[in-house]
View: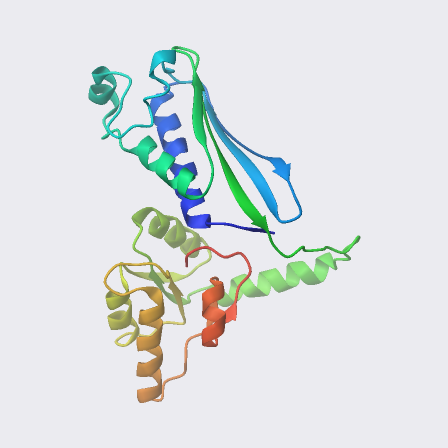
Length: 251
């Protein structure tokens, strides 16, 4: 287990992957993560994003992480963008105590890399062998899927891509899905319609998932309503009396 700034780490990785995909018209984009040093309390990760894209001239490498920097204006016209992404990546990496750089040649692709020190957390151990009753496991999974058929689900998510993916998965499980784009809309829907389950994102504009959940709980108590299931994928919820789902995320 590692302890670090997961949100900022993810943001840098996503920015580098997005750039690689944008400038790679054919070939592939690869993401590599390795531990380059380790001590009793700290590990140093090196993350690389390698592509087979258009590449960058050597004399531009030291300037590419400056704000608004681009290899040339023709790239702006062809690929768009503001030129701020790599500058933001550099600031985030340096704030986390790491370094960032690039290896590239025109026409031969690029490898953007950065290092990130993280703290070693609690160790987890797994049993040497795990016995599984496959018949029982299959029966349990089948029963769980059947219990979702026709279920009325309120999906609260402000990111449209995440919303599309989640809605598609829920539809495949046989659920009827209603969506809300923020916490205020979630409270309005939950207090005026019946749902069997609410899937609540935690980080949203207007009213976040925590605040929306509090308002829904208050409404349930005031109207003597049966409470919605109270599982949560974010460890912060556990302190508030919610059971925690393993896996995490921001929802």
